[in-house]
Length: 303
Image (tube, rainbow, N blue to C red; front, top):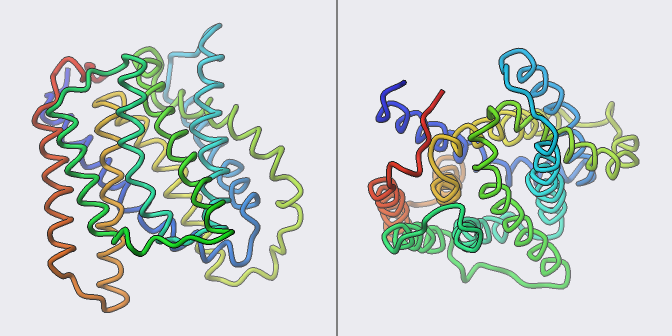
């Protein structure tokens, strides 16, 4: 069995990579949406990533789902792929990237509520404190006062919020399944079930995409969205849930404002002031607190 400390380090590095790469999704995704319909973008994600993940699962995993496993995998595909992707990309088209970022910290809050309600994970006051610190830090960095309201943005904000709840359900429900079925296989079948629904809904918009007329930057944005927030991040997140907890994976989403702020400093010349430093320290403190107070019983042996 691998050294637990080594496993923990790999989990944290994987989750850190996920948030760094996902931090650019709102920016790149917003640009792509200027040239391609939201449903078409969602269709591209599953059309390219789904088959690749299935081929990897068939090549490297020996355990196969059986009987009732497919019902659970279909439910995970519904929440984690179908609802999650459709509502996020459609909501992003209606609202602003800032609003979407501000709503993301609701994921760990929803995850804790779902995990407690279902009894999947033990949520202690210490872990809740860590989540509270991280969420507070994210909201401070994002300046909640910049949250905008409007006829269209309200619809988009609601879609993003339901997307966060759906992803939280996926994180919590996936953990028991991952104790029986390898992460690659779970992710592959989630894309089979959830992705099929997306392709059915997105088919007309996919057929209407003006492929030859897309600018180079739009193509680069599509490649980025398909490769990182979809293919790589789904695999890493599912792998990390098995080796840690849905709460830790969800809390890592509070790092997205750190990524967005860093990009703004590097590319837009913005300043990293007291508010950003305070938010960053609270997020890191929350993550370290949760990690330190996570019980060994919540971490299954890695295989």
